[in-house]
Structures are given as structure tokens and as C-alpha cells.
Amino acid sequence: MKNFPRLVLCSATGASALAPAACTAPQAPASRPNIVYIMTDDHTAQMMSCYDSRFVETPNLDRIAADGVRFTNSFVANSLSGPSRACMLTGKHSHANGFTNNITAVFDGSQQTMPKLLQKAGYQTAIIGKWHLESIPTGFDHWEIVPGQGDYYNPRFINEQCDTLVNKGYLTNIITDKALHWMDEERDTQKPFCLFIHHKACHRNWLPETKYLSLYEDKTFPLPENFYDDYAGRPAARAQEMEIGRHMDIIYDTKMYNPQLETRLKATYEEFIGRMTAEERAAYDKVYDPIIKQFYAQPPTGKALDEWKYQRYMRDYAKVLKSLDDNVGRVLDYLDEKGLLDNTLVVYTSDQGFYMGEHGWFDKRFMYEESMHTPLVMRLPKGFDRRGDIDEMVQNIDYAPTFLELAGVAVPDDIQGVSLLPLLKGEHPDSWRKSLYYHFYEYPAEHMVKRHYGVRTDRYKLIHFYNDIDVWELYDLQHDPHEMHNLYGEPGYEELTSQLKEELHRLQEQYHDPIEEELKK
Ligand code: SGN
Ligand code: CA
Image (cartoon, rainbow, N blue to C red):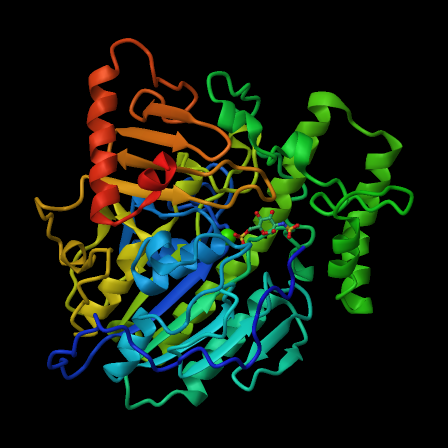
């Protein structure tokens, strides 16, 4: 477990250096909108009721969509935390911003970033919560981050003085407290601001807040129809290690603590619940002890065990999400009470999607729909009349140019994303992108998802898994939305395949991804 990875405390990372491509800001409008960007970790659209009503209710997240817009085709460029955050901050794909994976990458804080450009244009910038980019944040007037993945209970924070401080309570509440405190008491009210609120929720191992420990305990979640996927025709999908049945840790993930049992993540679990106060621990044990007792008295086996684990997973994830939803509500209420809503763009998204049992999985990484997709809803500032659904394909590299344009800052030419402002104004530009590029690098690693890149159009997806495998996959999302049938190499698909390969190469050229050249060596 990487808890305090290569975080170089207090190292100078060139806080004010800007790459040459940065342009000078044009004359900014008098009252520039604020930006409140709320990003969760591993929150997937299946678990957000404005996208999918099967599993949970998320009234506060839905409020953003109801008052604003919901993106129905929102995607990431690399479905993993650090890479996703780097794409968001730079507006560039992973190979271009350098942060390709969570294991070896360290974000080069001297490069051009959207917060730096906003800061230069007179915005106050702040980030609170999960950072995960290994170097010290640059481009922020204020930052308070959690080390590594963060702790759900009595969490450690690293602040601008580079002190590590333990805060009392539950992380989702504390991040919100700090965000409200900064908006209320610390920022310069004469300046527009851009605040990044980055939650750990709903990341593994889904430790709920004490007040929600019992929530959902009487709920049985429906099993996804492809829970028992056999991965036929998809060797890369078969090779992963993220199956609920085979790879979830019975102690760490499903919380069935047993002093006699050793599991890979038992020590990590002990460390996590060891952070609770005696009172918190008593509340926790009161709910989980009877479940543990019952489990070991009559342990389920085979498919019954897989499905039992799925229910535990869904319940704990949903509980953690409930605290998150409450806290997003607190931010919206605050902005409302202070009269800030009208002049603020509120964005809610996640660092990627997640599997809730589809293909039998948890975790993310794959270019398949559940994890390439990410929720994206926005409440728009005055002057933007668009409401309802936006169906154009958007990607997390688009946030940087969107925020810059909103702030009246010229978007540097080397930014690869596209501003979403025309869509927020109700336009449907003919020239809008017709395909998306994706590249995942973190292999070999936990969950063992092979390296791959690919192209997605509104209907088709072509993926190439490489490195220690050479496998192509082709899906028709219209007829096979769950990506169960790999059409690559099947008769009748030759022309489509060559068109998609051409498009893939066009994107690799456009974004300057050298991978195909490297593979030829
Ligand atoms: C940790 C988790 C993994 C997860 C990665 C990346 N293991 O390593 O399950 O895929 O984070 O997640 S754990 O034992 O530490 O919980 S990410 O969202 O940060 O990219
Ligand atoms: Ca994540």
C-alpha cells in the first residue's frame, strides 16, 4: 500500500514558472464568475440517481443537474486517479502532461496548469482534499491536501506550511468544513475564485461515517446482468485481478475481520480502523460484529459467496456516498445563502467511473464504458441559459480550457482539450469532436489491467491491448452496450476496423502520442 508515496515535502517545484506557450490574458470582464469544482474519487454514474435510479438516491448531486446541465457522454482520458487529475489540471492527455500512472509518475509542478493561468489572471485558487500527484501543489493560493489516498477517519492533512496534521472526524465532512471556511473567512472577497474540492469518497475500502453505518443494511441490490461474465473472446478482460468473487479481500474490502485469518490486506484494514476513536470504533463494531458473526457461523461458498460480497460492497459504497451527497448539499446551501450561486459555475464530477459488479468487477482502469465514463453535472452562472442534457462527447481534458475561457483567459495553443462554453451556451457546433482518445499505462500493477489505448466514437470502440499482449477489441455500443462481444477479426467488420484504425492514428498524431512508433521499435 502506497500511503506516503513520493511526496516531496517542501520541495521547490517552480511554483510560478509558466511554459512558454502560455498567453497573456485578454481584457477580463468586470464580474468574472467563480468556479467551484467538486471531484470525488471512484464515483460512478450508476450510483448517481440523476443518471441511474436503480441503486441509490443522490438528491443533492441531482440538484446540480436539475438546476443546470447533465452531460450524458462524459469521459476520462485515462481511468485512474493521478492521471485523471493531471489531465484535468493541464488540459492535456497523460503522455503530454507526463503523469501516466500512479506508481512511478511524479507531477512536474513547473509545467503550465489551468490554476496557474487563472491565478495569473487575478483569480484566487485553492485546493482541498485528495491531490495524489506526488509533488507539492503549485498554482494555488491555498492548499490543504491529504497524503496519498487519505484516511476516512481522523485524517492526516498536509498544509501549505508542509506540516502533517491530524484532524478529528470523518474526511468527507472535514474537506467540506475546510472548503466552506476558506470561502467564508480566508479568501480575498475582492477577487473571483476557483476552488477545487477533492473528496476521497467513494474510494476503497469504503469506510462509512458512523451515522450511516446501518443505512442500506436491509437493501438487496440487483445483480448486474453480466455479473457472471466468462470473458470469452476477451483475453485482456480475463487477465485482470478485480473480480468481486476472486479478488476482493474478505477482511479489508468486506470487513469480515477474523484474528485467525491472514489476508493480503488485513494489516491495512487494521491500520484504517485503528484510526477510529473508541467511540467511533464502538459504533462500527455494533453494526459489523453481528454481520461478522453470522458470516463465519455459516460461511457462504461459490456463487452465494460472490453475491454476498457484492451486497456488502454495494451497501458500504452507498453509505460512503450518502455522506458525500450531504456534503455537496452543504456547499450548494452555502453558495445560495451567501448569494454566490448566480455568479458561480459549480461542477460535479469524479476522477473516473467504476464497476459496480458489471463483468463481475470492482475498480476501473479499462476503456470499457463503466470506467471510461465519469459523471459530470454543472450548475451554470448567470448568462448561460442551457438546461437539461448535453449529449456531445466531452472529456476531462476539456475542463481546463472551459474554466480559462470562462475567466476570460486566452486558452494556450498547446492545451489539447476543448472549451465546453459553446455547449453551455446552447450551441451544437458542427465541428464538435466525433471521437475520443484513451490511453491507460499502469501495468503491471494492482488489478493487472493490461496497457491499452483506443478510440471511441458515438457508436463504436476500438481498443489495442499491448505490452505483454497484442490484442485488439472492437465493440458496437449500439448493439452491445455492455461490451461482451468482441467483433475484431469477425467477417464483415474489415472496413469499419480500418476506418477506426485510421481515426485512432489521426488522434495519436493530433495529440502527439508516440506509442505506435515506440511499439514498432
Ligand atoms: C489503491 C487501491 C486500488 C486502486 C488504486 C488506484 N488499493 O492502490 O484498489 O485501484 O488505489 O485508485 S488499496 O489496497 O490501497 O485500497 S485511484 O483511484 O487512486 O487511482
Ligand atoms: Ca479514483
